[in-house]
Image (cartoon, helix red, strand yellow):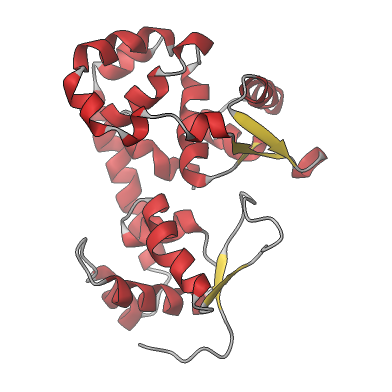
Length: 236
């Protein structure tokens, strides 16, 4: 599901956020990886390869470079190795300061040069890329919706952006009764940002004892998923 994040990669806020690391001369692939790990909370070699279409060795070298730069922290060992964002990566101010985006657009655009030799090419055609990624995301949404029973699919499909959180939480629990779902899958299904899904649905539902992690000992496991707790009454 790494491709889920592509649709907003070229957004002004993300470009501004990445510009803070221009001194590292990030490649296009490394910049994409940082966007993904910021949103997903973890990244492994396999996901990096899916994201960038590079080989295993190149992926390992890039991840180690980001680790050595202080942006990623390495967890696990051998084939179970994965990376999580460091405080340096998460504490950057521009990603939470929208005023900076509107007040200094020219400064932000000049900072793109250090990110990648292809940054100018990417920024000149954001509409075509965004449309392609939006179509891919819509296809993924429909594929996940087709996994659900008819009544539940209709219920999920009727959820709008301003739907009451409690009703959305109830629907998430019903979905997670069917199988284990990763946060990124639920975000695609609900057509919401994965970080929003975690903060507003998954964490409250776990606090209430209605959902549980499939791997609670490793909260940042890239394959982390969520399932409904047995014995909880259905609210459908």
